[in-house]
Amino acid sequence: MLVATSEHLKGREIVETFGLVIGSTTRAQWVGEEVVSNIRKFIGGEAIEYTDAIANAREEAVERMIKEAKQLKANAIVGMRFFTMPVTPTVLEIVAYGTAVNAKKSKK
Image (cartoon, rainbow, N blue to C red; front, side, top):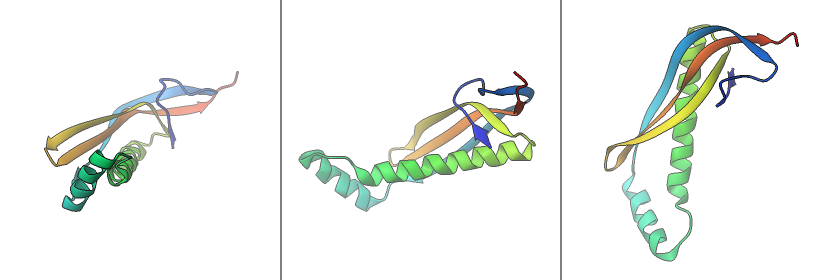
């Protein structure tokens, strides 16, 4: 499955548009991560615990979006974006969305 943040795919022509596809997931913060993160605030450095958790959540959201596009028989997603928002002070929702399309190789 091709996934692009652009509206066009180089060397391909969009021949069919299926519409919006969405994948989302929520992640709760583990108390241990909060403790380690607070320590890092004082000593400096990247909060790796959060970085890894958010990266995994983004991957899961993209996988769910792709699954939805495949159910529509699409072979690509264009205009893909992420949206993240807090659900509660300790829970985040990560959303991946884009437009499901069929694209074929261009004859140009």
